[in-house]
Length: 314
Image 1: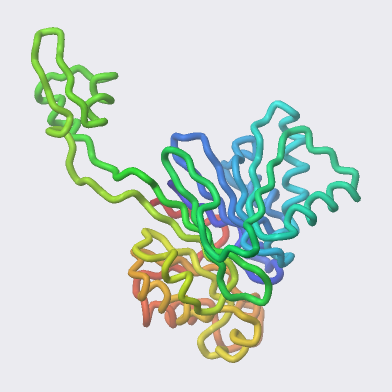
Image 2: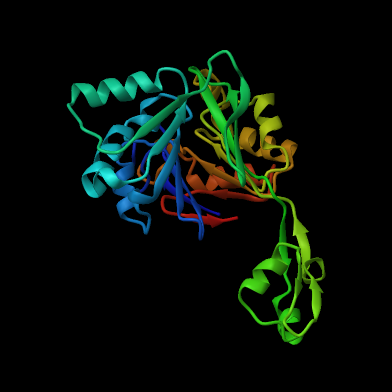
């Protein structure tokens, strides 16, 4: 899996940061998911190797404009580019997301030639499973912001193991379908009668991967539970720790709040996003984006500050 940051600014775009959107790419599975869809997300996608035709799901954290204003335009452009034969797009999010999208498309007389399925998180439920298949499960939990907001996790159901291909080659086992059978841990018998057990060709068994995408929030216990043991936590960091009072008034996180969540949840990697434009290079504050990273790393060293088009593979 690979994460591509399409927009990392909060509130409004800057010269180097667009507003919130993150792509999750399932490598070799031909699947593309999006997390939030701020304005100009479709233009950001055009600057990458991503293809809208591969878009399968969109998860919306909350209905503030910098997280959803790009959604109608992106869906419309997808229709113009690919026509009616494209796969269905599923959209998940909070109450009234369906009203916002349907009314916008209706008022603007926008025709979407492919199927759209909107799944609303029940407002009376604070946590649960929003989607799953044989390989993955997506969970949600409500976090603390000034409107209904959610964080999501993507979890691999099955543990992963490393196939000892060099060992198979040394034993003159022919590649192809036999390798695939061994990778599944099954027993194979060659035409010459030699028998091999798949478990003898597997090692480094690793727990299924887990990624957590956090919507706008201040510190909350529900996020700790969702993020527990994650390989990657993507957390908003709108403000510097030096402006903690401002963060509290706006129900946002500071650098050290995000880092503390990562530390308490024992995640492997933290990536900060949703950076306030006040810290851009053309402002008059003495606090810089580099300072934000230093603040967070003082609490949780395994921290990265996201930039637009940054890629991170899990």
